[in-house]
Image (tube, rainbow, N blue to C red; front, side, top):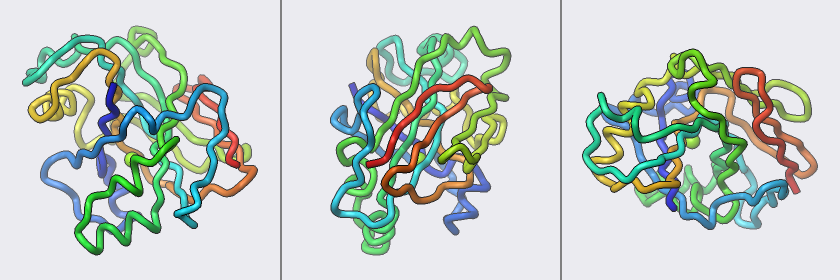
Length: 203
Ligand code: MG
């Protein structure tokens, strides 16, 4: 399986990192080795002094597809989740300044937390999902999918022009504002529509 991540999909987050608003979705990949195994902690890697949390709504692909039309995109997923796109922000800035790819900052081992999957029919409206991230019990990120620049169906259509989507692939749909650092012994918990999706300890 592969993990396809969307960058800069919420205006407020683009502003907080002083990035330009993209004309098309920004895409990068994480390998399957980026997954944090269930109930395992996240270990801060030695190559970064600034690991940021980015809480994101996830989509799990359940059919093989390429060049998927937006109007059919809803047929390619049944489950929605919540996860963390851990980012070595210091390294990412360095790579960006040099015009180099982001993989070392974004796709390293254990950079992807994937919470519990929920059938999409359990939600009233996928385009108005509330989600939040708590750090040590305090809310640090809060988002609603209505603020996505590109909606889930648009993302599936766009991504599948470049990458064949396979069963089990996961799309990270971008983070809202409020990204920030994690340190040893922090506990971060993700909630989607007030339902707990994951809890991860930082080591
Ligand atoms: Mg992200």
